[in-house]
Length: 100
Image 1 (cartoon, rainbow, N blue to C red):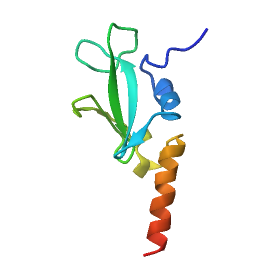
Image 2: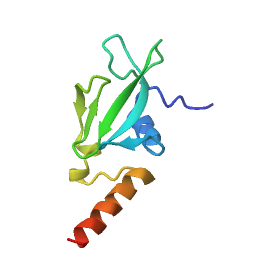
Image 3: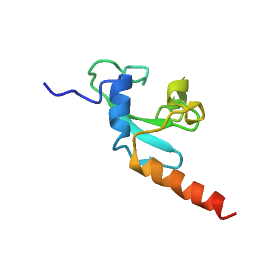
Image 4: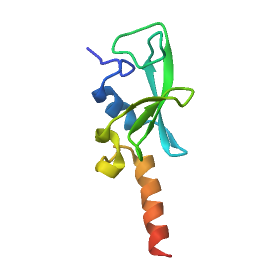
């Protein structure tokens, strides 16, 4: 049985993070959305994009409205996203800081 990663759960969020695009400081994720445009824990007729900002541990909807904050997903509280694109941006920042 395959898992539908678009059904919202923390495990599916982490799984999507492994390959999610990282641009402008956030990851783009896709989940089923309920009628209030919040991530749904069950299949619905709508899939929407959500944005995880790891520097603040916030998940935002397609209009960038705050859905939730979770320290577990906040890099200032020790979260390290499992994504190579994010790690590369951190490596660049570290080397730039060392050169200044």
